[in-house]
Length: 278
Ligand SMILES: [Zn+2]
Image 1 (tube, protein in one colour):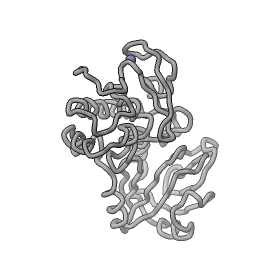
Image 2 (cartoon, rainbow, N blue to C red):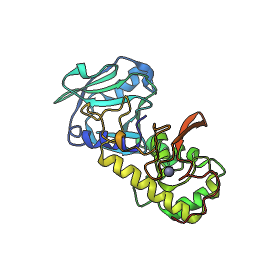
Image 3 (spheres, rainbow, N blue to C red):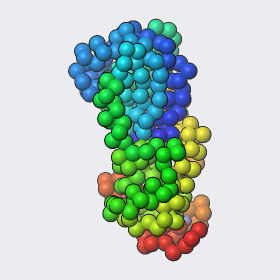
């Protein structure tokens, strides 16, 4: 599932390509990915220019001439690609013909993704509901500790809640918790100030190095040119059940809670409150 680093990589690929292009034609092949009637969706986009594109959490937000935004959430397996050779897309759901260059194609094998055209005020409400951007200055260790202290949720579940911190999904939540030496099931409020600081640093380090590596491709993720990311081999625990921990060689343990797989090193991430200060 694409998380902050994957969506950021896609947006960086679209940035030099999309702004200034006019949407000349919209072809909806699978309307179940739209959050509004197909006719309405197309009418609100046809003839508009893409003015800018940015990321917010796991969303791609494209600003349109005349006001409004196209918001794309990639769900489990969505891709937003600009490709001349359409054989590179396997399950196209929406195709945008642009005034120049290759078409913009939303491709999604499982179709849990969502596309929606909103006006500015609707987007502002949605934006406001999302937590801070973890790579921005609004995400602070002090703020994180204060927020954690109000919740009894397991820390991994807390990190997946987009209202708490925007853009973190299961891969990077597991990775950051490992780096911080914190067990995924620890209640959020049990983290000390020191641990919250460690987690804050680990989240930022995990996400920014994944951005540098152009995202993690386990199966479906591709950037805007259809190219896989390079971060999968850098993962420390995610998907590495029974492999040795890179820090202490203890076997990594996979278990499931909250309907999601968790991965941790039982030695580096003790279940109880850690007494170490490292
Ligand atoms: Zn370990």
